[in-house]
Image (cartoon, rainbow over all chains, first blue to last red; front, side):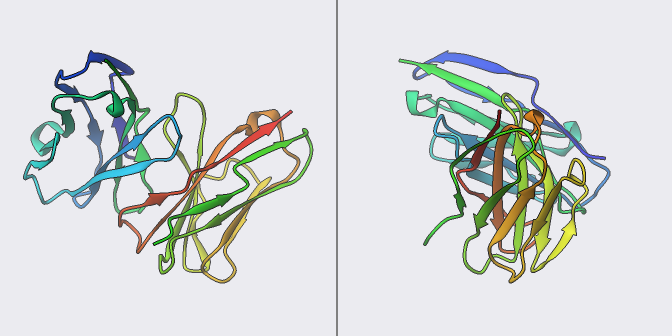
Length: 113
Length: 113
């Protein structure tokens, strides 16, 4: 069975602060994929990143960066210089050999002006 | 190009009624997934199709739930004898192939009175 844990239920920051959203996963598969999605108040899940289990390189996209560490089974997401528009619920997800994604419960990020 | 679309966006029904929810995936995407999302939770897998066939329906909660994808494109999720506990947002996602990135539709909010 696979599991995704997002221990932070809600994070509140002030604009321009950096913030890291944690994601810890469990799987017995050797090949798997990790994802982050953003769900703004409008409700539609927006894809942010996909990472396969053989690629541990960290990735940066603008103000977003991701740190994948197999040794700790973590795939954390950092937003640098947060903005009010970053306010949303963020989901981490894992897909293994069954092709069925498991989502975490999400972290609600509130960025105050 | 056009994204995943879902109709209706909102559905209010009475306990015991039958409902159909429709999903129109991205053109050319062979895999189609249905999820259910309750308040404060991540998407919960229901069923996925690869082409016309249901590849895995292990997430369907009981036999009141059924889904079809007769021509390998549009899919319909059918719920018989609805119960108040079926109230949730039903999400559809499609991907080029299994394990590829899934792109989500806006969801159908189902309310059973």
